[in-house]
Image (tube, rainbow over all chains, first blue to last red; front, side):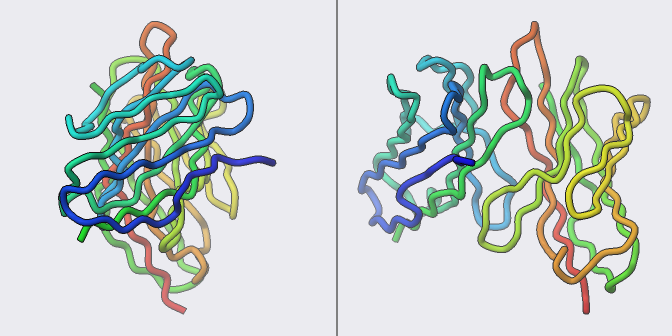
Length: 113
Length: 116
């Protein structure tokens, strides 16, 4: 069965650069969630989208922005990168935002040097 | 606001020992409860989930969890652990408000190390 696809899997950037992460949800899933997991930490919710509209917002820095496109894929844009942004970024999806269970992608590991 | 507490940060067991990881949540309404496992360097995988019905939930790899509403708990158990169970375990809660699902809130995780 198709899973949540994230790209790139690994990304290395310098401080103050920008980065874009992409997430392709499971087919027919219309809700996308972004999580950030720092080293040795639990995943922290950043932001979610339902039917291309932002549905919930967590601890996402102002330097970050995200959107969901007409094909339901989502992109997380990160600017003015800081060392502390180094983390594993997970995308998850589900259908209708109402089923409770989230299906996670394998994550994109961002390293900021 | 919803929150999740996992009291054990690191658990070390020998193979064949029994496991119980504690999870308590805080939320005033209806919740869905989950346990996820994360093997080193990998993504989160669902172990089991509770939505409603029988409070004793069985998941993959021989894991089970019991929802005790009066205690706001959802402890994870396994009768006999294996070396391959070495991983980080996250309890998570998804609270419902007016019929709209919200994002998962994770506990801080428990690192389980099983010694061969």
